[in-house]
Amino acid sequence: MYQKLLVFILTIIPNYSIKAQNSLKANKEIRYCVTSIIDTVTNRVATDTCHLRLNPDVSLFFNQGDFKLDSLRHNDFSKWTEMMSNSLSKKIRNGDGNFTCIVQKDFKQRRYTFEDRIFADRFRYVDSIPTYKWEIIKEFKHIAGRKCQKAIMTYMGRNYVAWFEINSNLHDGPWKLCGLPGLILEAYDLKREYVFTYIDEYSTDTEMSLPTSKHYNIDKSTFLKQQTEFYKNPISYMEHNSTIKIKFGNSQNPMRDELSNNYRHKPLEITTK
Image (cartoon, rainbow, N blue to C red):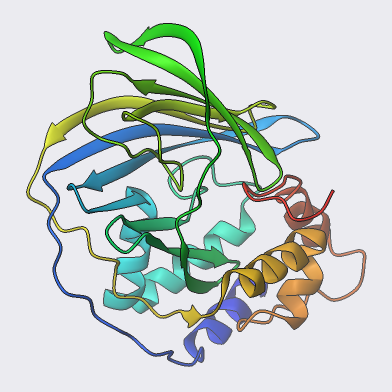
């Protein structure tokens, strides 16, 4: 009954503005394994494979599985609603979409575009690329046969360690991380709640524009407030704040605890202690 109700609500979701972008081509694609602790009580870990497409001026970081899910939403809406219903009925979706954000960096304009999902709604904002205060350490190791050097810095509530390739003309990295004199092959916060690890890379001639999507255009502070509200009380958010409003009934509904347990972790950017 719950799943049927959800599918019905999904079918009446309003359309948001859809904006296309000019075509952008990458000349290199790098794959990272992204592991994240999605339950800090049980230390349950999710693993995703994310891609960094780039050329000298622009890059795009994304989860291939989430890209496919968003494409399905636009091309086969009925199948998408079915998948969303099924995902809510599961305790957790290990891999293939837990890391849902998209980051497009424009190094010429010194800005980035960020898109992510809070429950069923997608949000997008544009902000300046941070001037990270990296401290480069005289410590070295090899990753995938390449000599890398250590760097540390603090950003948005987390202390990061990054290992960047010394002999590289690329100054980018996974997620929002960049600004070192070389490609970041490994990065993690000190609690290792989020870890980015280099897998491989190859030459390419593929598209790296932001996907055409139904989303809300907002600013970063508004997005972080929405995200904080969601993690603080996901059940209340689903019932009152989301475009798709879910009613769970009384407090005895086992799905309330099940879904709450799926969000016992902090996002990458921490705004509250």
